[in-house]
Image 1: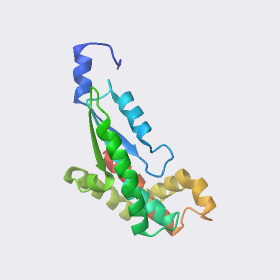
Image 2: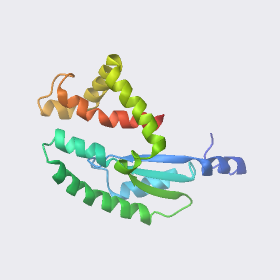
Image 3: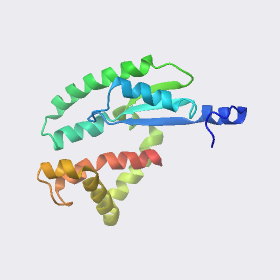
Length: 172
């Protein structure tokens, strides 16, 4: 697909698309400038950009990996999310930009249906659970090694796997 070809058909296809930007709140790039850059890049590719702050996933990370209390993690993330939400509101251009927290998105009935399917598969299918836990371990391996987690079957891995399950449900 050619971006910016100038044809009416291409423009119509793009305006009907919704892009999704998943913002990992613990990442060093989770800054207002990054949101602005993503919006600029999304122009011409979609008509709407949904900016989804991964607050639920980051609370899990801060509690499991960093040993914070859930309340402390929530207070910290509320500040980060507020800053990013303000940046999102300032982004204006040829596309519509919407901001949502993962914690709000997961209660949407259309998402809940797919999350239930993925979560059930994780709970009931041992091979699927091992695959998800293995991928979670591989994705977070440098951080986990610093925590002393050297095996894929550490019980903390299943708590951290929730992010990957979220992504899978979102793709569905």
